[in-house]
Length: 30
Image (cartoon, rainbow, N blue to C red):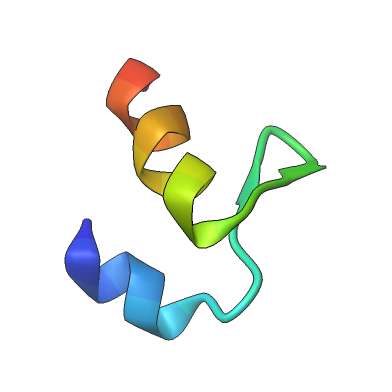
């Protein structure tokens, strides 16, 4: 997952833009 964070400057969860802090939380539910 950490590699994906580096590859995605603006991560999005199901079309919803999320911050770096929320990014980990969002993917935790996946």
